[in-house]
Every structure is written in C-alpha cells, then in structure tokens.
Length: 335
Ligand code: NAD
Image 1 (cartoon, protein in one colour):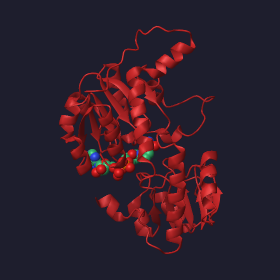
Image 2 (cartoon, rainbow, N blue to C red):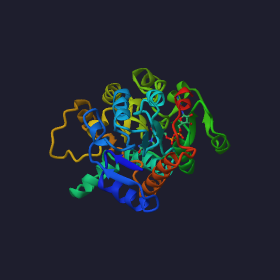
Image 3 (tube, rainbow, N blue to C red):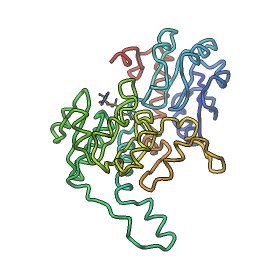
Image 4 (cartoon, protein in one colour):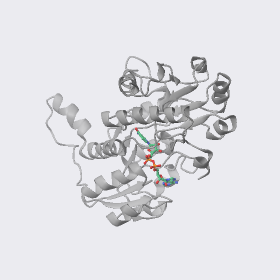
C-alpha cells in the first residue's frame, strides 16, 4: 500500500522502517501535520497514517476522499480527532492501535504522581545550584492515600495495579466496572464520591462529548482542598482556565499533565527559541506545583515497536480485504 504518513519525526521513521521490512509498504514520511492546508500531500496515496494532533474532520475527510484516499490509519489509540460518522458515510475506513503498551502510559502517570509529591523537579534544579536545603520539599507517603481513577480500561487497570502495590486505597468510576479490579479491592463509586474522597485523581477515560471538561469548576468544588490531579489521557477532559483558578486558590495542590487541550500548536516541536502565544499554557508553567510533559507517556521503545507493528498489519489487512479487528466502526461512537 502507498501510505502518506503525516506528523512524522525521526523516531517514527526508525521504528516504522524496521517493521516495514516485513510488510513492504511504500511509505512517504511527511513532517507536516495533516490540516486543511496539507491535504494535497496525500494526493495519490490510498492510505493516510496520522497521529494524535492531525486534524481529520469532515472537511478534511471530504478533501481526502476526492484525492483517492480510502483508509485512515491512526498510529494511536484515541480517535477523537477523526469524524468517524463522516468517514463511514463517504466510505473511508479507519483503523487504530487500541493497545500498544498501557504499561508505558500507566508508568508515566505514576511517575508524575511521585515527582509532584516528592518535588523531584524542584530538588533536581536545587541540587544542581548547590542548594541542599529541604524546606519546601516535604512530601507524603503514598501508602494509605485514596486515589480516584476515572476510566478503568487498559491504562486505568495498569495504574490501579501499580498503585495497589504502593498500598493506596483505590476508588474508580467507569460505566463498565472491571471484575479483575474489583477482585483486587478497587471500589467503584459515583463520580461525586470519587471527587469527594480522593487525595489523588487520575484521568484514563476517552475524550467524548460526555467526558469533555469532566474536570471543571463544579467538579473541583466537590474535591478535597489540595487534591492532586493527573491527566495523561486527553487535554479537553480538563477545563484549563478553571483548573488554573483552582491552583491559585489552593484547591488543586498538585497538577500533572501529559496532555493539553490546545497542544496541537505546541507539542512534538522544539519551540525553545520561539515566543509562546498561548497565555493559558504559559500561566500553567509558572506554578511550582505543576509538571507538564509534552504527550510523551506512550513514548517507550516497547510501545513504538508495538505501534508500528500493529499499524502496518492493520493496513495490510485492509489492503488484502481481510477483516481487521482494529477497525473503528460507527458502533464505536454509538456506545
Ligand atoms: P480503554 O478504551 O481501554 O479504556 C477507557 C475506559 O474509559 C473504558 O473502560 C471505558 O468504559 C471508560 N469510560 C468511558 N466513558 C467513561 C466515563 N464517562 N467515565 C469514566 N470512564 C469512562 O482506553 P485506554 O487504552 O485505557 O486509554 C485511555 C485513554 O488514554 C485514551 O482514550 C487516550 O485518550 C489516552 N492515551 C494517552 C496516551 C499518552 O501518551 N498520553 C497514550 C495512549 C492513550
């Protein structure tokens, strides 16, 4: 299959080239992000491969179908950036990588919790300056703390298992409770009870209309003063200006983000010599109790191998007219 791969970095090329030896697809590695201005690069490619911040809305899909594109291959799990309804209507198939390494994301999530709690980001900078004072670095024991996990699918389950090892009390909220986690001692509760009782809240549900801004001012009013909030799922689960107010008044005591609602214009690029025009994002970076990473939770060699293998195998299945278990169908947006 001829594939136009958008938003490609050197590391994508390394892993995809190695894996493609088995498949023999013809891949054009494009640095450009897929937007209304870059669809022309897909001309002559039946398959377009995209990542989390490529835009695959109704307008772009209609443009792509006119250029002969019949397959969108997401090299990620979430498909919130694709208009699945329109893709279905115009006959473009969509495939994704539903699971590559939930452990990678879960381990990064717990890494953010530990770094915020023990202020490792501040300690690192201090020691390099010859400042060995401990004032301001006081943390708390994870053991015995209540952690609320919103979404206990593949990643939420791994996070629960890791935190169980720390001796945390685990609360969860998910429309589909996970039997293995109930056996582990996880208590499923209402969102309200989770907000009210948790010392740490971590988000692992997908971004959908029902979960958009699930963390806003109203939600924060139910939370404990000084709660830790972690989001490694999708930026728009959080109303960032509301959370900034929460940080200012101390309701949010710690914030760990790997995703940001407007990350498409920032993440995955080296902007270190540029002026950042997003004032909301810039305000976030001024707080001592906030750590932001640039959507790197998935980024392990194990996950990259798995992403490239599944993406190329998905494309081969569709090319050969075989059933593909990783196809995103209209049913996915109905459920
Ligand atoms: P998953 O589909 O296995 O699990 C999602 C869970 O959320 C399911 O159990 C589902 O029932 C639950 N859910 C749905 N609606 C809910 C709601 N309203 N309230 C609470 N729970 C709800 O997905 P996953 O593989 O665990 O991934 C979770 C999310 O993590 C993805 O949607 C993606 O956005 C994000 N992700 C981020 C990275 C990263 O690098 N930061 C990498 C991979 C995935």
